Amino acid sequence: MDLSLEEFVALDESAKAAYVGDCAILYAQQFDRPDLDAYCSLADICRALHKMPVGAEFMASLLPHRMALNFFVQPSSRTFMSFNAAQLMLGMKRMSVRDVAISSMSKGETLADSVRTFMSYVDCIVMRHPDEHAGDVAVWIAMHAMRTIHIGGEERPIPIISGGSGTKQHPTQSLLDIYTLEKSFEHVGGIDGKTIMLVGDLKRGRTVRSLSYLLKNYRDVRLLFAAPEIYQMEPDILEFCDRHHMPWEKLDSLDAGIARADAIYMTRIQDEWDGLAKGAHTKATDRFVFKAEHLDRMKDEAYLLHPLPKRDEVDPALDYTDDRRVVYWRQERNGMWMRVAILAQLFRVDQAIRDFAATQGIK
Ligand code: NCD
Image (tube, rainbow, N blue to C red; front, side, top):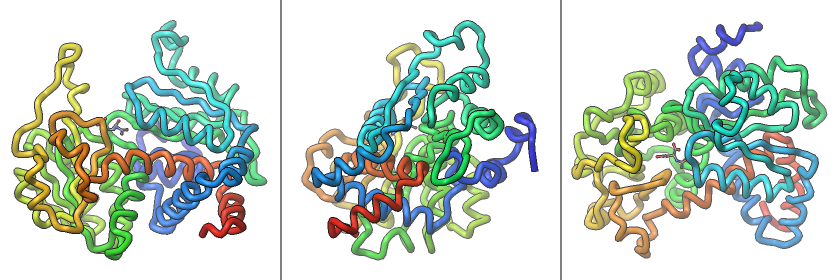
């Protein structure tokens, strides 16, 4: 079925996910359990392989003929840097556009024309954009533009990867969150059967939305949504959970869930959408702040995550604790390995990495 750009943008995300297949990474609904398991195992392999000089050299020999564009027109530290690091590890060349004010978009060029222009020069676009439909526009153009690239024996559209779209999706963040959860729960049966508490600005937090979508791929997961009413999770995600038989509860404080949660996923208030004065920030509500004493009330096998950047919603005393349950700095580094895995899979060098790793005794 072919669709005009307008028809495509009007679809719901699951239909978009089906339409784009594996031409892009834009919606967490694109992934099933085997995909998630494959990404996690590949990220592990890349991490182990890169520790060996011969492995790092092999990885860097894989994609020297590929040019990536990192098109990030919203602030970013981790996603931008970890994609850059991942591209370098795979030997890719990179360019970046980080400011529309100094591109032709400031002359009135449409996003569609700009993206089409970028596609003349690069083999992959990683994009972070405030408009939740910017990725839709880019993938539709990639699927309809004349330029294709040869990947794994096929002519394919230029891959588009979301590094965060509006308030709606951040699929690669949720993949690294899954990787972090799976590693944390490695000795206690993985993510299946776990209770995950999401805390903070669930309404505008794109990470918690994408993560909720991915968690439906695990058995018997229960979600706790702890947020002030104005920042509570949107009804579409609650309906999604219902459709996928994922029990959920809304909570009015972090305390209400802390003793039950196997993972606590903190988020900051996304006040960039509130039009505040430059440098001004909304303070986190005390009932949703993770304080040092909360560690005493957490289960022994529970983990504290945060996509970062964090502000006052987490006690800074936790940053240098040796409590192994505080995993957000590990989560940040996991992001780089997951992004190596994502790029390797998109460019179909995943099997070559697995084969080479096996020759080095890595499985
Ligand atoms: C998140 C984002 O951009 O949505 N950051 C990130 O990529 N780690 C979370 C946030 O900004 O709060």
